[in-house]
Each structure stands twice: as C-alpha cells, then as structure tokens.
Figure 1 (tube, rainbow, N blue to C red):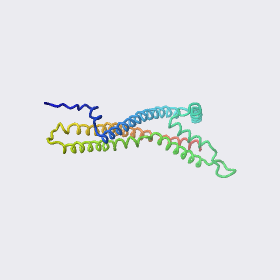
Figure 2: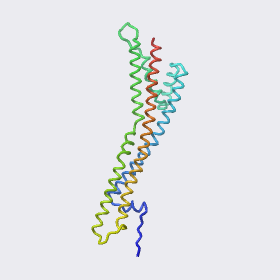
Figure 3: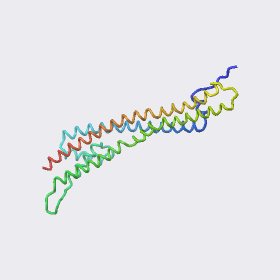
Figure 4: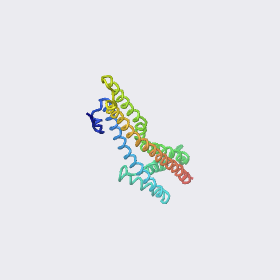
Length: 231
C-alpha cells in the first residue's frame, strides 16, 4: 500500500516544529516591514527629485529675493510641502540676510556673512540627507541577515528530521522528506525577504548619492552667487 503525504506549502508550514515556525514568522514580519519601507522610500526619493528639478529651474530664472519670498511664504502656508533644496536655499539666504557685525560702528563683514551662510546650508544639507537615508540601514540589515536567519531554521529542521530517524526501524526518503521540505521553506522565505531589500538598498543608495551631489553643487553655486552680491 502506497502512503501519500501532503507536502503542500501551507501544510508544511503548519506542521513545522515550533522553532522553525518562529523563524518563518520573524522573516515574514521583517519582509512586510521591508516592503513598507521600500515603497515609502521610493515615494520620498521621487518627490525629492521632482522638487529639486522644479526649484533648480526657479533658481536659475528668478531673482533671489523673489525666490526667497516665495519659499518662505510656501513654508508658512503649507508646512512640509517645500523641497529639500528649497530648505537648503532658505537656510543659507536667511543667514546671509542677517547683519553680521564684526565690531560696533563697522559695516557688516561679507566674509563672515558668507561663512555663516555656508554653515547654515551645510547644516540643512545634513538634515536633509539624514531624512533621505532613514530606514536604509534597516534594508541593509534585512538583506544581509535574513538568509542566515532562514538558514538557521533550515538547519534546525534538518537536525530534527535526522533525529527522528533514530526511532525508525526502516529509513526511507519519505520519512524525512516532510521535515527537510519544511526546513527548506525557511531558507526560501529568508531569500524572499533579503533579495528585494538588497536590490532596493543598492538602488536607493545610488539615487540618494546623486541627490547629494546635486545638493552640494547647489551649495557651491549659491555660495558664488552670494559672494558676488556681497561684493
């Protein structure tokens, strides 16, 4: 008589040992969080790129004072709607417009104004980069650790399968197939969690690096504009 066993995906998960099920559940939770951050980061980078494109066009074609007035009024009207480059520009322009007195009775020092504006823009730049890089480290951790977590579940399941063989008089492949299959599912789930996280991390790191280059180039260009105005 031939005995058939149900080796469907859900049956193997439901009949897996408790440690293997715990590993699977952990990987599913981590994968869900990873996909959430992937879509959030995709939206944030697309928005930052679009806002940067729009502001660069406005910066090239409009008077600086007019741009500054528009940026500050937008920030007051719609908090959080301004782009990263706009906030960097606003920080530098706001600091440059402040009177930087070296000594009482003397005119403002243009060099001090420029240095203060650069420092303000650098501080704003760091804040924007920190915001863009939020959760990237989580994706990197998921991509590097998930396969090993899944492998732990696989090793545990295979060990449990071979331990059960000691109680059998006759060993067949059918006796160990369910245990090995459930163990391999843990590795598959680990890879399912890791691969999208690695791909997203590499892609988003590249996109953020390109935005960082654009921000730094703008800071240098805007500093030159302020230097000409100061003279």
